Image 1 (tube, rainbow, N blue to C red):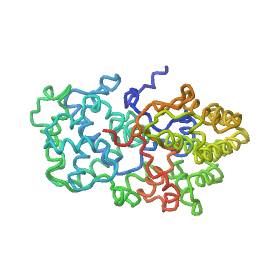
Image 2 (image 1 turned 60 degrees about the horizontal axis):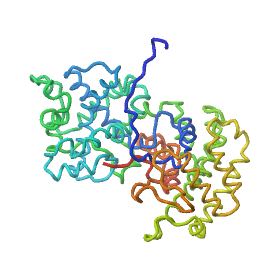
Image 3 (image 1 turned 180 degrees about the vertical axis):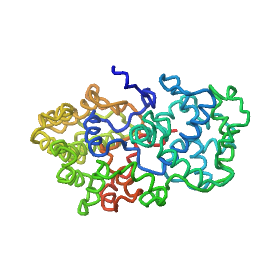
Image 4 (image 1 turned 180 degrees about the horizontal axis):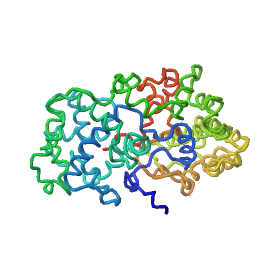
Length: 458
């Protein structure tokens, strides 16, 4: 490998216990379209305010980490040590938000923080178990925004950790918004702190007791965006820093946002995909053939998830029989209707021109062909269950065994997110940064109002 390149791991590769949103193994195809339309984002990146707050967290955790002897990010152990100083600040911002009286917004880890608060903040690691505390690196606020922080120039130096020009400016803006007692200064970290006493497990206690002990005593200033304000513009000073970073002139993200804003007649997510695939403006930035399959893909995957959810509902209709037979399930009129819609959407996918040239088409085509060849509702149901079992990502919902469909998880463990391409996040970020009026597009997406895939599981 050329010496100018290096590898940076900003999150561990341990699997999340319930991997959401890939019931059929279509994630690679969905990510392909998402990266074309909204590079550098994720379905969890929808509050620009958290980019500002996390910039502040990165700046001050960097100070503490370096004072404690850090400086090398080339090894995974070093990265874990770096994150140990960042994680408490993420959680203290959730606590600070709740302390202010705000209870909505993107607040990952909220349930644990609420337990911690009820215990007068005396429980270690914010009332999380060791496993929950470890996994917060994946499912917490930094985990939701790490791609943005790593890939968008000006936020970090490219490693996802070290604040760059834009992040430092955002961090200063956040710090200046805080009450005088809650703002941080470099002198706070120059008072003879024995860093060795806090490293290696005491980082959370350091921030609670020494580093930012007034985080919750003095509330006010910038907070994560509440649900009711999620479409509103951020203050001008913040927009001036975020807009050029996220939506630079001529950037793909800006063009996508402007095309979506122009789709005044779109009523659904699929309508927006039609507009994107047929946009002459976007085709100047993205090869038009790259998006040609987007409308057929989204309609087929939506139909597959609709049938999947209805099958799951039917399995759980009879509390006395949690493993109904295929024949019984196939008698459901609603399920039969959704399976029929799926077959028709699959036929459209199979007729799509140049489908064979799409590098991620194999798994999608496999389900479409199998549904085409299944002539009865019972056969179609078996096709759906078998494809989910063989190709789905993460924990399986159910499995056909000896003519019955056996649920494999509790009803509360299921997340039935449709396959999405970061359209809601880019619309919200564009609205917050003042790029355009995104209300029409957001109204079209309102039926899928939560694309925050990992949710608050702690």
